[in-house]
Length: 133
Image 1 (cartoon, helix red, strand yellow):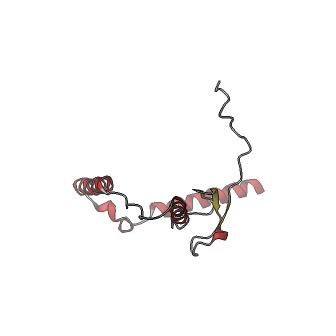
Image 2 (tube, rainbow, N blue to C red):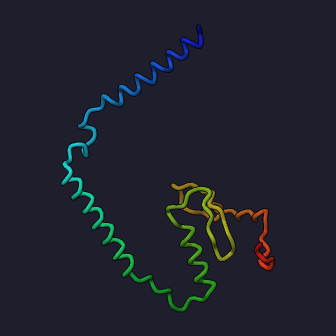
Image 3 (cartoon, rainbow, N blue to C red):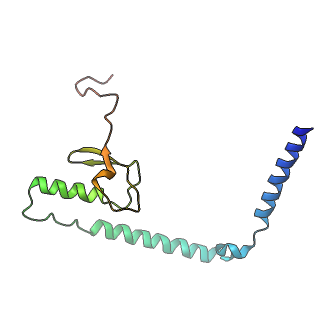
């Protein structure tokens, strides 16, 4: 009897939640009122913007390296640039001039050296001199 009641309650809950989804008004979905031609125009506009972005990215030249810096200064600047990347998420691994580090900080705070810890070395080392089978 308890199992039957439980099954009925679960079935009723599922039916009620699906009925709510079906009862949503079309006004909540502005794209539902577009005609096929309007939709095609949106797709073509998005494709054009994407192609323009790619073309601009291909023609843009990289910033020239600052003059007068030594190799060590360039490496440190590159490391700092990578560590200041706003898209870093906890657990991301960064390759620096001093080896791999793992970002353990938070998104909202300014980056500190303590936000990065050395990445653990792999358990399995590949022997580059051993022939592949």
